[in-house]
Image 1 (cartoon, rainbow, N blue to C red):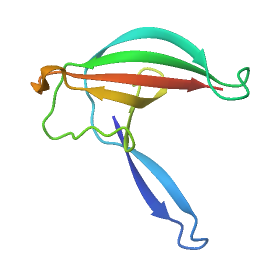
Image 2 (image 1 turned 135 degrees about the vertical axis):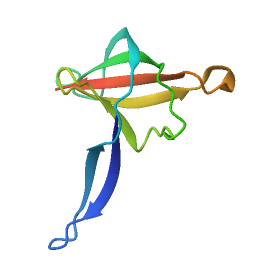
Image 3 (image 1 turned 135 degrees about the horizontal axis):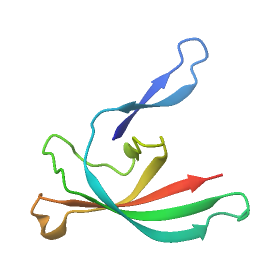
Image 4 (image 1 turned 180 degrees about the vertical axis):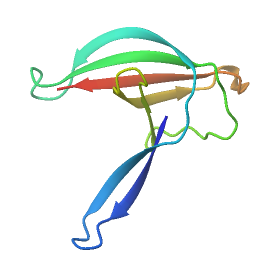
Length: 102
């Protein structure tokens, strides 16, 4: 799991997003297919996945904007598009992820 922090370059003042690994979590992954995104459909393909995080941790506050997942196997980055806590029981978190391939 990665968390985003925003920093400003001291010399240029340009704002940059920096993603930092913050935790290793366990999850099961289910592929849900793909869909073309944007005006240039040939250039970008989004593959959606549903992930069930079975390693629920109270110290993690999930955020679509500030968190993403990174595969430890191949380094693939997955943006979180939806977060669900079934029954609000805080035992399992379901995430809908999108992998962008260019």
